[in-house]
Image (cartoon, rainbow, N blue to C red; front, side):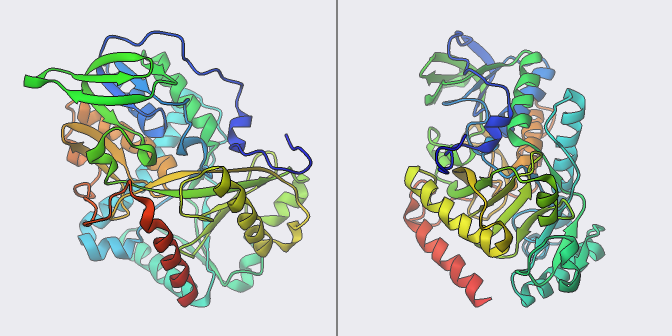
Length: 434
């Protein structure tokens, strides 16, 4: 896949699945019970659950199955939220904080159950994760957080001192780590295509290359009218499941911040060399706000990602970020400075203005979004939860107890990226100051 050492600007994961052709030929159904916009983890999980209940479902995607974050991530199904448990306790009190943390554990169980029920071959494994401390005071804070989780949430983690770090990761860059064995790894492309196959088996229609240009509510309870590049259809309910790529529903899209995330993958190493880099086999991420995360792939590549740039990905930012990430990788692992980079890619992840996931109904439209880098499991879980709400088996506000979807502060709409460089500079300053 390399041309004179130039990395392929494409998610590595897409080259681990059988070749696919987008479904661009078949006609759309005229009417459905539910139209799902977005064929990623959220939309396909919801479609599977809805079709299982007998609903007529059409999933509409502007590109192909898993085109967005669902095939561009590191494939990490992590415990917890983007916000630490201590922040959740301070904001919501211990009761709701426990519910939110419990939702993160249930989300991993949800992925594990679907993989088992649908026999999806996607390298799912409860390999656990390790958060590594970039500074001594980070490790002190991480240990206090682990003590809180053990004492008040009944969730055990393990602190690893700097002296014992070699059994986790072959790097001198860190000052300790916290290990959580409940997290899981997955090949995200294989998983999202497995979800699509499962939804289709249950009767859902998945229309690729069907970009939605408008969603209009009919008068007096009439169905929604949805216009796509492949035709129009009517739907009783609409689920917006496009995350950071939400554009056609303004009242929802203005509440979403699309933040760039970038990844590189090395050439395959000999298995012994790869295993020596991360002897524990854990997934790793560091304690910085401008963080790095990394793991090994089944074919012994080192996959290394992070917030190399806050802007969403384009050709320029991918190339620049690939070099930034390569330098970061060599800073962590000087022993791989000679490694070829085979793949480099980027994408956008969705943040809300309170940095929490949300699901519910806004202006009549169902939604689930705001995963902030925890979308592999949480998106799958909330897809199922919001499907129950659409089916009137649960209230929409019971999908996750994070409150209403927050509106942007005055002058800060999610679709206006002018503040992202300022945010990036602020987080870099925090990392330096801490």
